[in-house]
Length: 188
Image 1 (cartoon, helix red, strand yellow):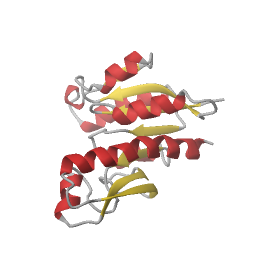
Image 2 (cartoon, rainbow, N blue to C red):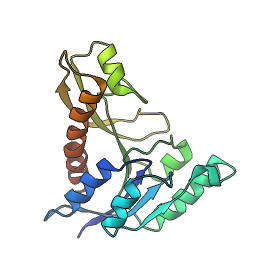
Image 3 (cartoon, one colour):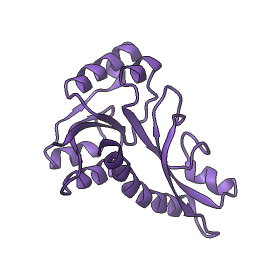
Image 4 (tube, rainbow, N blue to C red):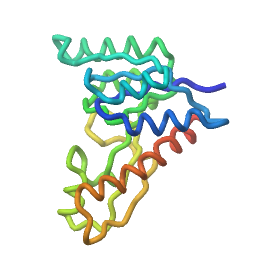
């Protein structure tokens, strides 16, 4: 029996697409029961619709406080009783209260080899720091940005002719393999 996961997005949804593709494989232990976006213009919403996955928009700006926004998120997520909540390009740092409600069930993928290069512009940071490797990290989520316990990482060599764009493409390919693999391992 497949376990429910909820995916939170803010943008184009390329990691969402890789998870959806994995859920179609025989024996994959997860099924996406809901996609939530905090951005009504997120392209990932179309990917969810094209795959007949329930999806909703919950924009933080529609609420008078972060707490009310998170309360609504909790209510919608809880209705689906997920075994995992997967952040896939979700651009909001969640509060300690939110994280504690789903203790150990929230994971994220980040386009750097954490703890290096938290936040945005990771590929520029890796190149400008003279790093030999770039990569991606799947980690448990806590209330600090890109800070939770590391579950898995995959790395790629940064070559002298890499730019932020070429490195981004190489790392994204790794993300699309690593994230579904980690979800499989956590739920099997």
